[in-house]
Image (cartoon, rainbow, N blue to C red):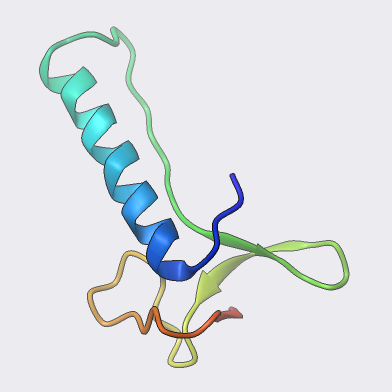
Length: 72
């Protein structure tokens, strides 16, 4: 899903994690697996994991969400 900013992406990832936790807690899904993260489409057409200029990924409390980030 395309998002407008790293801040929006982090909020969406939190909502999806809460949704999956609800399913797990309430035993809605009998077989459970989950993965999350933010990837950025590079100019060469390859997808790479998003990270800020210091290398912090989207789920890090230290991630600088004020910039568009760079690929690791």
